[in-house]
Image (cartoon, rainbow, N blue to C red; front, side):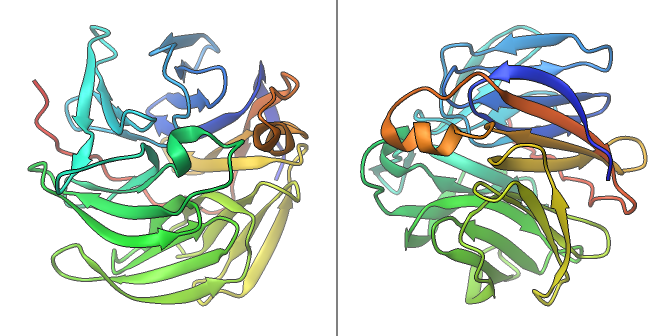
Length: 289
């Protein structure tokens, strides 16, 4: 797979999400929600919001993203923004990390460890779901570091990176809740992930400079080398679903993050073309004023 670097000079890129001819991405440390257009122009929204680890599209054109405030919405047409969710069952969220639409108008999301204070010893995180009507519930807790999420083609399995631990898979029940957590892969350095139309799971690696592509049964199918050591996430897009957008944190992003410093500004957004399309990512259907 041939990669082209289409944006660089950042500290720690994350959360790519294709949006027609555009792609959204974030910089955890410098802040902001970035939109790259097909002509290469990059617009920046919410410049002061850091640690945005997940982005999804709402059906009305608004953007839902994470961060230390919980779930945040943005209207890119007006620049207006607000908080969609900051408490669940009376408990304040420590922040929202990676997320993925549930295919029913809501989404699954994980919480941040200490609201983005990565230099501190990691605290346990949780996995949550909010439905299209705004009802939220905790599905799992006591997780090492909740990260990448993705659904199988039939929507009956949810893949989940529990970074520093392993990749797990859950059965999705008819009400959207989860059951029967089981080991999918012992890979402990996974970050963001995506699923293709064949049901294969593409898992980024924040320590080995690669994307690992798994068969649906967890066997490794391919290893795709990426020019940077710290590969943070990926998504599919384009008219045929074969565009792949990959974010990195350069070579030193994780080490600098954990030490509380700022990595060199070498984090980049890459583009490639895949042989197989990715699954179309559902939109959420939140009613936002």
